[in-house]
Image (cartoon, rainbow, N blue to C red):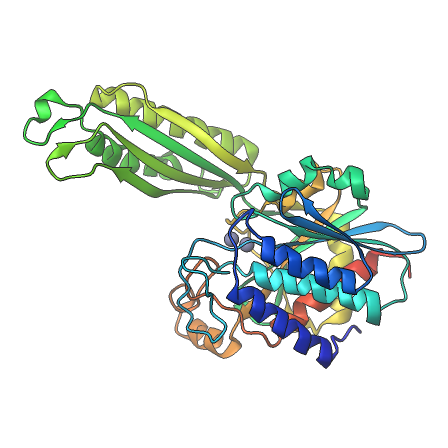
Length: 402
Ligand code: ZN
Ligand code: ZN
């Protein structure tokens, strides 16, 4: 059994609250990276900063054995925190609303445990502190900066996320786990003019409205009920004044899917609808631009079984819960290097168990339990902190030589 010592938990609580108070946006995580690097150096890790921008890599090595990669993402979100916590963000309009401060703290905790407390292993542990997960570019940036060429290709990669489940619960599934994500920007062109003379203009506001409504039919009319897909138009911008017909309108979309063929079909439908609506309005050709995408996150069956066995030995049975498909996306999947590195990724609950039980009894989990990216999202520290440290250590030790 792995048990996080109390003095380490005190130290990790201080670290977590400091990171939470000072969130930094994607690729701007300079202060965070410096704190991480200082911790790693204090543990005697070989420590390299500036990998893929603001990424940090630590290496713990002890004799012969496989290389195990443990990954935490470190960036925050452009969200104004409303938790009212004493350690709430002091950076205006930036908050750790996805819990990456927890991930960072977990990984520092796991590194400390593997360096000082659970030392009966040999092999290498790659501690990867990845920037810019929220914009889907950090994992790619670290790989492009030679993560595996410089530090070795790992035998296995592990990652985890805090989420809106009762604190201390661990959610896991094998195979396809998280959705592929695509971010799409659409520029609809019209012809600007006076609001009193629409006959002399092509109105991109009406075109945008029609396009948004028609896009809802991609999921409802073009995809089988058995294929989960989400299509959300999350941004819509046009115009400056009530009596001016603007020149153009811009839409921002996110698409989530689990099967490549379904994704292809949805992407083609989006393009067809956007061009079709523009033609219907007599508007010029619109622009459809794929801003970024990442693949579905697929847990390797063997690596996953080994992790689950380690968790079963470490935790009481009722703390392990099977997960449904998660429509959120993660760039952790890129660290599998197109499936060459087996990987496993799991979830650790961070919600107040009493509040969760009450919400569940009232059938109001979605309404009452703040989820990742909400301005109210704030994991409770006990036992979330210790749980995420112990999951990482248990998974790593299961793969290292004992
Ligand atoms: Zn997020
Ligand atoms: Zn996240």
